[in-house]
Length: 159
Image (cartoon, rainbow, N blue to C red; front, side, top):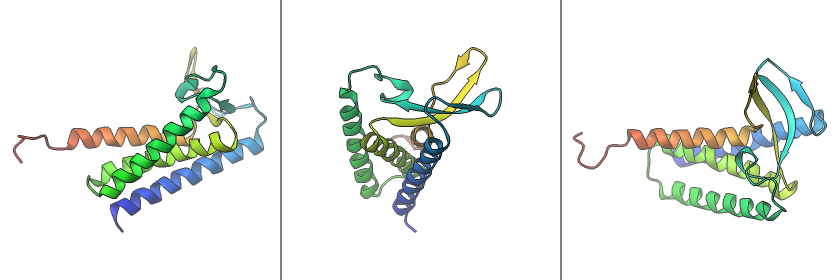
């Protein structure tokens, strides 16, 4: 199996897991409900009309189209990068994670008008904004791309 195909399968897996998990939350929780799992982890049903960490969520609505356009452009660029067929496996897996996450949140914006978030980490007075599997995959993908960048030989390095 080609690395490109593996990356695309990973993107599809992320998309499916993301959408299934969001569907389960919407079916089992009323908006705003919380189920405490541990002292630092809860499941919640939150709606995010903004970007990561609810950035721009309080805007009058223009951000929906803006974030949809960014997700579409990012997806096209990622597909193009995968089609170029250069880069190592870790690079392609990173792109696959980002693609699946971008498509998962895009699908929410198109069908619902907002992104469903449900993972909430908190401890004492510290609270991380709610997020979802798509967000986690995007973060993981970015981390894999950074790792790949740091592992690549630089021009002039002896090999």
